[in-house]
Length: 148
Length: 198
Image (tube, rainbow over all chains, first blue to last red; front, side):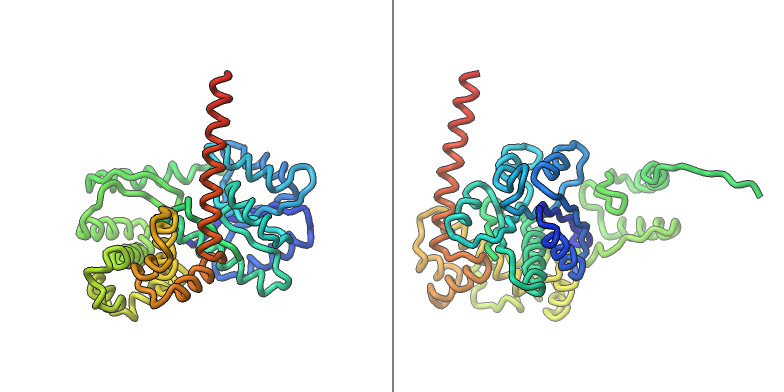
């Protein structure tokens, strides 16, 4: 796999957060194709299509209407075709209890929504680059846990 | 002039063009995407050279083959260096890599950064922390032992690098893995129960 073009997905009900994320990722050196979803149901409907292009990393907001991030994570880990997706929780919460809980339920990455644009960019850059190393270097995915 | 509209399948066309070429060299191949092809086995450099020449005549270029290959080689050498570290621990990693890959360290370093957007130094840290995680997962080693095995000068040095790389302290990491294992087993048991009930 090459790092030339990565597919990244984000499910977040907050329009401002989606726009900010899109701006941040588009300015990175790593070229990406971004798929955006307004809630968990929209995301799952897409992922469950048999011909859906699966993202290399999926960013999931925890608090969303219709279907929240935790339920998406549970469904993804139970689905044989989706269970190996890299999932990054993208949330405002930074309580250790919440964080541990998401890892235990199968999240790989926990990113607390940063307070400014530059920090968000650095965080996304770090996540994409480490995620890519995990995929291209035979690193053990069961141990892939990252907190930013 | 007459205008006609055409519709075509790029993959079908490409296959028509490539198939006789690859057959000529006795190579089996498959499309990974329109821009990436997997070749079965490992053809000799001579064959790859001839293939490249034939492809050039059609305006097709093999891109980056060498650079990506070199990066894989560097990664493999780093893994060997870290895992079988005992045997080579008197040799500096940069010297070891230069000797193993037959290029100057400066060349290796710039190629690695160009292809991966990350540095050899970063990869070494990532890889070291991976090995530390494996030792932690077994539950058989203390942090002191792990630090020593991986050549850290102190537990504090290992803990700091672990925290910088993963965002978690080794202790919290171990706790998460322990809970995760427990919950995975619980889930498996639930599934088995559901299966049995059906």
